[in-house]
Image (tube, rainbow, N blue to C red; front, side, top):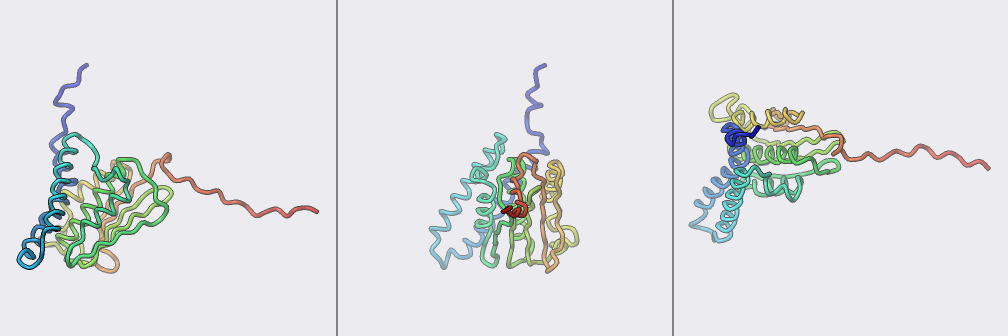
Length: 227
């Protein structure tokens, strides 16, 4: 039986989530950088900043094209670690330092896992910049034998510190989408107060057995040679 054309199209809810997850953080970052550029325009040379913003706008146009054609984000072609590192470099701004580190032995996960972790990094960094009133943001990719965890920590006002009160900050479409996507992949996503203040967005996903790094076999004690 032939499949109808309507059934092959992206559902409105899926498209809404894709636009939010893959374009929303980038557009928010672009908006903030344009605001900073407007403030500095009267005092500083701006040619380099304008060129960087032009490249960012071009990247977002390309990302929209990839969403329409159901393709993964372009940065993931260079690998998960490189993509998250690039997201961190692009997320910093005056008054906010974004650091990045890798813990454990890095491996390249399946495409669906890599895309979700990359989305989580973009979402976390963008929300820290917009809502956290933080000076530092720390992004960690932690590789274990059976899974990968991405954490985005900040030293800001905490999850309940949004402008509309308790539960407003980062608990909208973005976090709901991350939680749903993580569950579908057998993992979990949480936004919790960090022990030292601020917030911690954590996304943990299991690695399929075929993608897990091989453990080195431990050699036992050497047997003494007989004379």
